[in-house]
Length: 157
Image 1 (cartoon, rainbow, N blue to C red):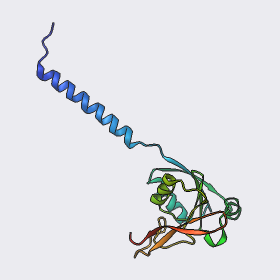
Image 2 (image 1 turned 120 degrees about the horizontal axis):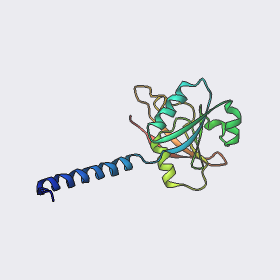
Image 3 (image 1 turned 60 degrees about the vertical axis):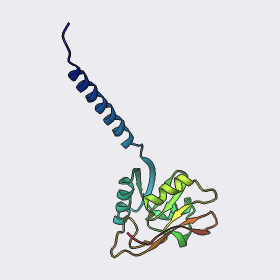
Image 4 (image 1 turned 120 degrees about the vertical axis):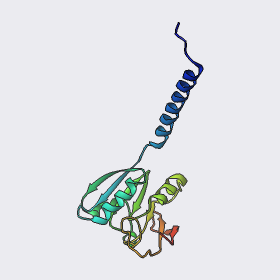
């Protein structure tokens, strides 16, 4: 029988513990991405930048290019609340350059009676637009009748 030192056993055990701990941490870091379906005009660069923002924030985007008018109608986005792209996620509609953090808050809260979130138009400092200096903007909820409430205010970068 070969002699194994106490030191060799301790080193072997500690190496195994570190390997297992590393595997656990790596597994936690790879949380599943939240799927989103983004409808956009194929030539829109700011929409592409917003999709990149969402992808960088653990969303998995399927991008569908096409005519936006029928998409806005299908998802019941009122004209006054429209932006350049429309997204479907978790049963909600996201219209325009809404920050990923607000989408996460919406999905966690699961509010009843709203269709989704919107930033009407194209605010200069919203994700995907990223203009400086920063200009404050609001994210709104909207319901099936087009009524809105303020969901979030973004006052600084």
